[in-house]
Image 1 (cartoon, rainbow, N blue to C red):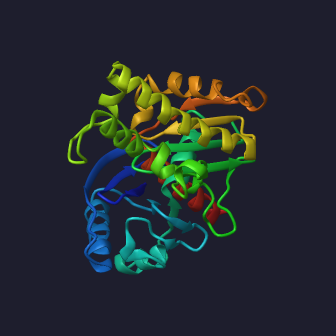
Image 2 (image 1 turned 90 degrees about the vertical axis):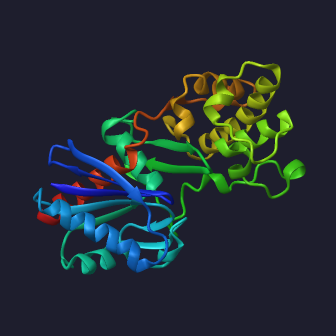
Image 3 (image 1 turned 45 degrees about the vertical axis):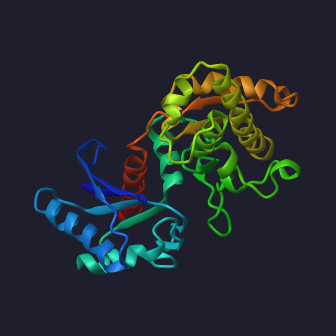
Amino acid sequence: MYLCFDVGGTFVKYGVFDEQGQLQLESKRPTALNSKADFLADLVAIYHRLAQQYSLTGIGISFPGFIDSQKGQALLAGAIDILHGENIVALLGEAIGQPDLPIALGNDANCAAIAEQYAGSAQKITDFCLITLGTGIGGALVQNGEIYEGSHFRAGEFGMMVCDFTQEGYKTLHELASTSALVTRYRQAMGWSAEKKISGEEIMADTSEVAKEVKKTWSDYVAVTIFNMVAQFDPALVLLGGGISQNPALLPLVKDALARNPYWKDFQTEIDTCHFYNQSGLIGAYYLISKLERKQLQ
């Protein structure tokens, strides 16, 4: 059985999977960001507690940032800056007291893509692109059935693209096409302060003319993100993820925006939403560790 972690800047989600990939237990706890020692101590405590209930043979970890999955190192650890440059696999194995325990580490967006590839919306598809819409823009590329990480493990950083230089300068798609960008643009249109609470779900449900215009402008940037990916990589499928992807209004909105692009007719490919949402990191981490263990047994 496998213990899997999905590490985020707010929570560490964790779950136990059996060898058939069935989730036997799922929970979460706040991410310990005070120090490296505190962070590791939390994961170690979870491991030892669950090892008393389950026969754990490996650990899978979904983690933010630039991740060298071969070495188990976080070259840049995203919101978990206490672990920048650290070899998380080695640190955790030593902290648990089992340096030879199989541990697999992968970038969180890549883990989401792996989950979709094996059990979600991208099954039997060898070339696809995943774009997550959330606080920022995340992404992953699968080519010839394998995650493409890039020579510096930075592939899939779609949110860092600059696409509207003459109007927005060096603003990236994080600032223009994310769900956070939609919320910011809506607040500005309504004349609200930054403290006013509003969710993407509420904005999607607003049928006022102001909201329609805000969503139209925002969806144009989402469509640019998709078009640029398709023009570069020619995937068979583009999957949209993140919390807002669960809203049934998103896909028609984005497809309408793509249709406004006169070049889309020459590049268009299938667009769909992810099957998994909150559990995608855990499920992807499970497939990582199960694949690693099978490889080690060969």
